[in-house]
Every structure is written in C-alpha cells, then in structure tokens.
Length: 303
Image (cartoon, rainbow, N blue to C red; front, side, top):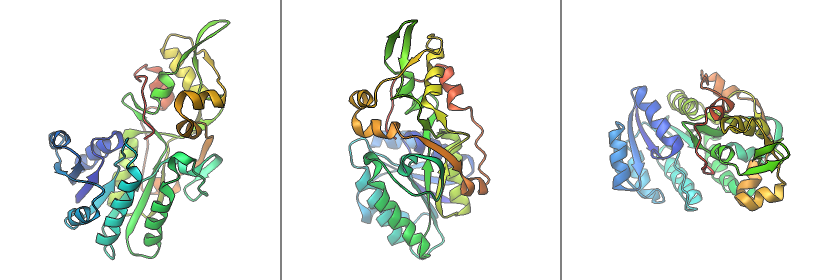
C-alpha cells in the first residue's frame, strides 16, 4: 500500500515508519524541513516537506495515497491546529472510499479509572482536552460510513531510552534516614498504562492493513504503579530501590500543573479487545524491565 505518514521524525512516527516498510508498504512521510527529509529518505521512505496546517495541500497529497497515518505532534503548541487540519483533509479526500486512516490519541483522554476499556467514557485532563472534539468529529464520520477511520490510543510510550519514563529515571534525589532516594511523582500509588514503542508501531500497521474502525487501545500488560517504576529506576541508579513521595502540589510545581495532573491520573486498563482482535501481540520487555537496565536519560516529552 502507498501510505502517507505524518510525524515520522517523532518517537512514535519513526517506529511506525520502520514497521510499515518492514511489511513492504511504500511510505511517503510529511516533514517540516529539508533536514528531516534527508533523515526520512535514509530510512527508506519518500519525503515531502509540507505545512500540516495547510488543509488544501494535505488533501492534494492524500489523493495519491491508499492509506494515511497521523502521528505528528508539535512541542510549540500547534498540535490542535495540526490535528484539526489533518482530519479536515482526510474527511474531504477519503470520504466515500475504503481507504483507511489511523489517527493518534493518548491514554490520558480517559482520565482516571480502575477498568479502562476502549469504549469507556472520556474524561481528559486539561492538557489533552483539545483532542476530544477533533476525534469525535472523525469518529462521527466513521459511524455514518463516510470514512474508514480508527483512533489509536497509546498508553504511556516507552522504549530505547526515550519517552515520558525519563521523568522517572531522572527524578530528583531526596534524602531519607537510610540515604538517597528517587522522588516519586506524587504519592506514586497511581498506575500508568504503558506500551513499548515497537509494539505500538505494530498496532498501527495492523490498523492500516485490516481497516478496523473505532478506538484501539494500545496498552500492554497490567498497569503498573509509579512506585514500582521508580523503584526499578532507583535500583538502576544504585540506590537500592529507595524512593520518596512528594505532595501533588510539589509535583505540579516541579513539572508544571497541566503535565503533572496527567501524570497523577490512576489508570487501570481492563480491556483492549479491538486491538487484540487485529492479532496484536505485544511482546517487548516491560517498562519495569527497561528502567532496571538504566538506559533512560533524565528527559521526557508529554507525547
């Protein structure tokens, strides 16, 4: 298939490109600069420098695609405009066709919950609340039979020493009666639903190839507490698993309130039926195992 991909130079997008090309798909990746274009071409894809907020230009590029995958995210606050533009272009171009479109969301849209499933109610914190009207417009068009569209909802993505888990590995060191410890995000009792980036990429490929619609929850295994994650990082740092809590307000001060409020969500995942029905089989090491290797640098991004 000829697949149009956004976000190839990002953490998720680069893994999706590798997974698509490994399956023999021909990928055209939309990038923002000539430097990124060279990186894409070295990875075996065709690169097109494009403005993702230009709906008309995107629609013209989509005309020549058999499928499209949108993983692009911006660190400059333009992600809402980008997502809206991409969905507008897809609705204008893929309307009435069988060409699949795979959109990207994130686990935080569900808010806190003990048994999150793909059809659970949505209750996003402020940092991702903008996603809902865009996704609902896309899924409403899918429900009316206008487009073949799915929304992949990744857990907290990890792998290759990158992603949000750098917050855990790079946590400040505190002092306790028995020596140094790593500072938790809040109390640490909250659970995070997680997924390895390479497992997640395989879910995108399956969604493209099989054209399943609706939300696809990309979370692997049981949700894990932040205490357990931080203990693993503490062992890797030679601190013997020692950790120490901080107040929610202290976490908000340290990380910024919008980001902290998302990290403080308690998310237990109960059901990923649609994803598993595609034949998805996440098999990479768990986040606890990865943190214990000490491979994570003390840095992270909200997506």
